[in-house]
Length: 162
Image 1 (cartoon, rainbow, N blue to C red):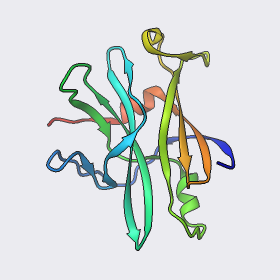
Image 2 (image 1 turned 135 degrees about the horizontal axis):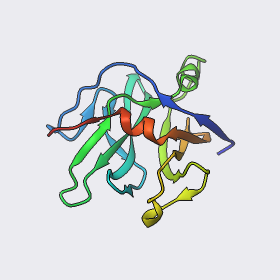
Image 3 (image 1 turned 90 degrees about the vertical axis):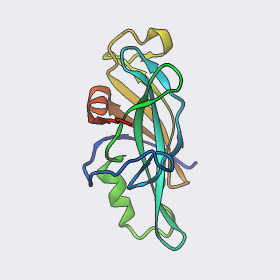
Image 4 (image 1 turned 120 degrees about the vertical axis):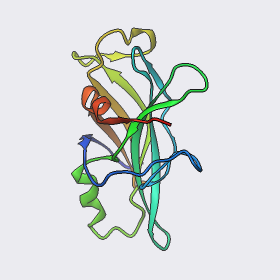
């Protein structure tokens, strides 16, 4: 990768999503696929990020990512999920700059910070989570550090009753 940038990200409203369990969990931004390892958040469940893509032209894909929370016990039911892709205006602006490649945003890993900016993990997540710091691949050439407000992310997730 050639560079690492930092991007503060908020939830961008695009369209409502269509989800079902019929042939795997899907939304209108493509089939949901892998992403980050899950982290257990007390009183919430496991939080993880996934990616998806849609093909818009021959050999051209646009990637998106979202988040989901799943239960702490088997069969690990998905409880909440993003209803919109987690993106920034900057990402969509890059799509219109005439790039002759895929537009890719792929979540890889993340950690959680408390209000003081200290990383909290595992059993230490008894402090109030404040920010999610997520590493992502960007357009197969860069790395991004994506920063999300924890409360805004969790409140943006919709209940999944399946």
